[in-house]
Image 1 (cartoon, rainbow, N blue to C red):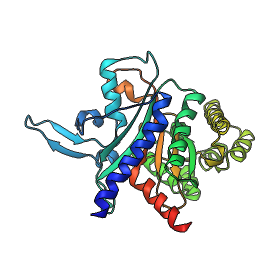
Image 2 (cartoon, one colour; image 1 turned 135 degrees about the vertical axis):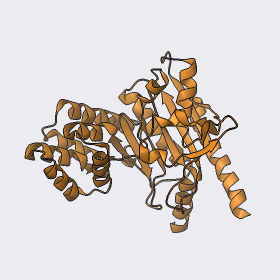
Image 3 (cartoon, one colour; image 1 turned 45 degrees about the vertical axis):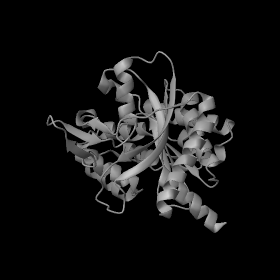
Image 4 (cartoon, rainbow, N blue to C red; image 1 turned 60 degrees about the horizontal axis):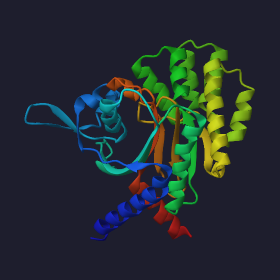
Length: 319
């Protein structure tokens, strides 16, 4: 019975933190339906991601899914009423999401608390959401967390260089995710990537650590125009986060890989040393709205409620 009450208490606490911290900044709470059309996700997910969807059939024979996230149905809902971004829109939520996994220790239903900012890309806007993630974790009592900054464009640019099939892209993604530079180097050699390009790709994909050191090292690396632009944007976002007082919580991981396939720009993950999985993840997803015939650039994050409170409780035990 304790877990039943504890779960409700945790949801109340995180909802109060989000309301008190974000509402004064113009963010409003949203609530979305649990059931979504399968077509909403069919074109936005990889084959691997689609396998995690929980499906059911309605009385008319149409396929429905229990929402696997909040971002996509929220985007679909907004796209039905507005095809272009006439003004910035800010919202937050605490909702359940549903995904099935081969790992039976992972619950099918998970509670997420998140933020979405519908705005054009800029270092100021991207940093705003990252700072809100830091603020939420701080207000919930976590002090030892780290936010890793990456960018979806790094992997996209690597794939553009290599002209890979979908299966080969998954291989490369796996090598980078596991920080396996030797396997990726062998893969590049097998695909006849020249030595100079190979060195460039490996140097970029495995650059992580203290932000200033990473940025200084990459200034000495001969990057192409696209890569240079990506690094400069991450650095501007970091500088903004530092100016707002959360620089000590930030690291960089240019080889960041996320299971959500729709990120198109900066992406980030939050971690605590008291738990072995992410507390939150987020990023910019400007291309998603085009699937719904709209132009609604946005950035957001979703936090794992159970993970946050597990990290918090573990931290209290060690202090």
